Each structure stands twice: as structure tokens, then as C-alpha cells.
Image (cartoon, rainbow, N blue to C red; front, side, top):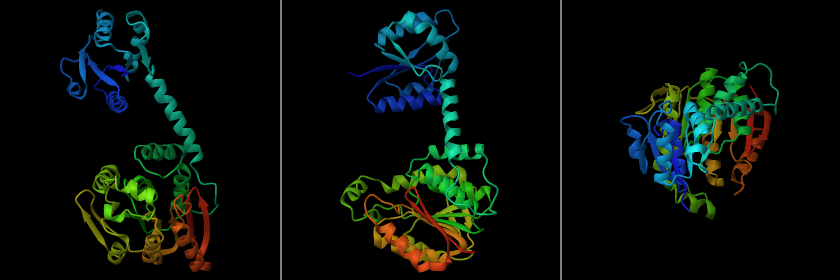
Length: 355
């Protein structure tokens, strides 16, 4: 049975988010507002105009609308409106439930949970002296909140380790191989700006022809993905954060490596102009995970990492193969005594070069 939900006031941002989620679940969502004109009406399957909650006729009009539309539940993102609904809904519409009452309290609890996550988002897996001043608890919470708005695979452990690595990174370029929607790139550019490390360069072809990894279940999923859409999403996510400190090369990794040099200037419509030093402070390898691709990425970029810099082999622990692990292990052996520190956290291998 399809559930019918009334959303009031329906034009608020949280109301629109709820509407999209509920419609995605198959619910019938009816909007309501007290405004004479509300542009949000076009987004709903049906629309009701109700008096303001402080007006005498509100409760009666609400009850009539609920009965007329066959409403089973009501949602309001507005604290005042939600409070009035709590008081009158059972009287005027018995059995109709109020979804998520007290939205302000729900918001406060969500931020409390975020602050608790921020407590854990601090590297405790390695100890290095000096480095940039650590982020405050509030700063870490703010970073996590922003990351939560960007889809992707980077988890809390990896985010914490990246924060720790960037805190102990030398000045230089931050290069990411494989950015897709931009989740980890957002974290990297925020940290690079916070500690004035250097500009971020995202390297990704954003092309379906480069997605095959030789694993049937992955390649089948990749066939359903729109790389062009991913490129647009990346730009949307990073546009407010770049500020001249991030840009991209839309090219295969090895091709981009040939263009990378001291004084490289990248100009794009979305991010403007960014100039790079040509030596890498932190290299994040997270492109195609097939062994040959990871090996080519590392061969092209690892030699460009400066002393004291970092190399991050993402998905070193990978459920679908051992390409990143084989390449990471080979480079650990190849670098030998140039490695000052290495560890695995989550699914990523972090390698710090000696100064």
C-alpha cells in the first residue's frame, strides 16, 4: 500500500530533501504551505494551502486536508510548526502520525554525534614530532560534516590518517590519481589550505573506457555508471572549496604525469588557474585497481614525491583483487631505506619517505 504523506511547510530545504527521499521510496507526497504563492508546489504530486499555525482556523483546515487527501503521516521540518502539530494532530486527525517531531532536537543530536565522531578522527596510529598545529575538535567536526555531503568510499579511519599525514607533510603539490566524485579531494584541499602545504592536482580521465578492472562483477557495475555525470558531480562538489588551490587534469594518469612539471599552470573553466611546484608532498593513488594500472600509476608518479613526502596506496586491502597490494609491497621493497614510516589503516597503505 502506498503511503500518503503531507509535508508542511513544503518549501523549506529540509522539506524538499524529505520529499525527494519519500518519493524515491514510492510514497505519495503532498505539499502544503501558508504562502499565497509557493514555487515548491510544482515539485509535489498535490498541494494544499493551509492557514498559518497561529491562526484560529488552522487545526480545522489541517484536519479537513488530511481527510480529503487520505494522509497517513505528516512531516514538518519547522520547529514551531512541528510543536503545533504535536499538540493538535491527534485531536483533528486521530491515527495520523507525526514524522520526526522536534526537528531542532534531532539536529542538535546529529551534531552531538558528529562531535563524537570528530573525537575519534585523530591519528593515533603513528607518532611524529613537529608538524603543523593539530586541528581542533571543532575543525575536525567541520571537516567531517562537509565530507558527509559528498558521496564516496573514504571512511573515518582513512580520513583521520590523511589528516595526520597532511599535518606532517612538507610543502609541495598534493596529487590525487583517481578523484571521481571528489570526496577525498575535498578533504585534501581543505587540509592543504589549512596548513598552506600547496595546491591539489586531481588526475582522472572520467571516462567509461578506463573503468574496466578485469573483475566481472565490478566491470558489470561500471557499465551502468556515467563517467560524464561523475565529472560534473566532482566539479559541483569542489567548486566552493578550490579557491585557486585545486585543479584537475582530465587525462589518463601516465599522460598527465608527462605534463606534470615545475611551473605547470592548469586552467579550467570551473576552477580557474592553478600553478604547481612540480614536486609532490602527498601522492594519493586511487585510480583503476587492476595490477597493470596501479603499477603504471606508481611508476609514473612515485619518483616525483619529494623527500619527507607521503605515498598513499588506496585499497591496499581490496576485496576484489591484489593489484594495489602487490604494487605497494613492491614499492616498499624498491624504496628500501628511503622509507621512514609505513602502516596500513583501514584499507590504505601509507608510506612516508625519509627527509
